[in-house]
Amino acid sequence: ICAENLFLNLFSVHSEIITPKILVYIQQASEINDKASKDDILLKDAIYSTIGLGANNFSEIVDFDSWFMNNLLPEGSNKSPRRRIAWLISKWISVKASKEVRPKIYELLISLLMPEEDLVIVMCAEKIISVLPQLWDSSGEEQYTFKTSIIIILTKLVIALKQDSMKIHEITIPIIKKCLDANAVRIFKY
Image (cartoon, rainbow, N blue to C red; front, side, top):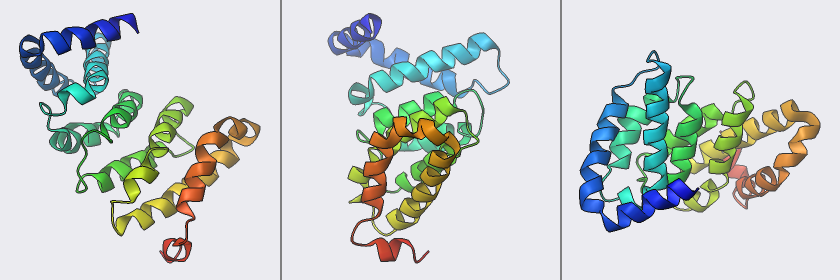
């Protein structure tokens, strides 16, 4: 946490020096694939961590929509970066994610919520899902399809976790309540 705060402070004071370096690192990370060495994967994780930490600072520098569609979405199917991608989305979704990209974000999050996923990835995706109700209000008709999918997946997740599901009730119950709003009939027509 100390290093993270130091980085953010350095960025706020020396953004003109750090910004070009960050852009180079983003490009470098996009060239690291899932068959890369462990060191390269750790480097990519560190770069993604940096971009996530500075989401508010980088929002004018990084074209999140393009980066998500061209890099993060395809990488979402690879084993190694899924947890970090879920975390990255949690940092960026409320900062800079257009309405056009949100359906793809929802689809990726839904795939990360599958009970077959590693529990760590599911927990990261759940944290993001908890912010989705605020975004749904401005998402239009596609929100109903995603709400239905999320309810189904959360139900499967709760069943898979059995007694441990009680640990995530504070996240899942408000989401389910939001999904089952006055328009519940419209949700389940799909």
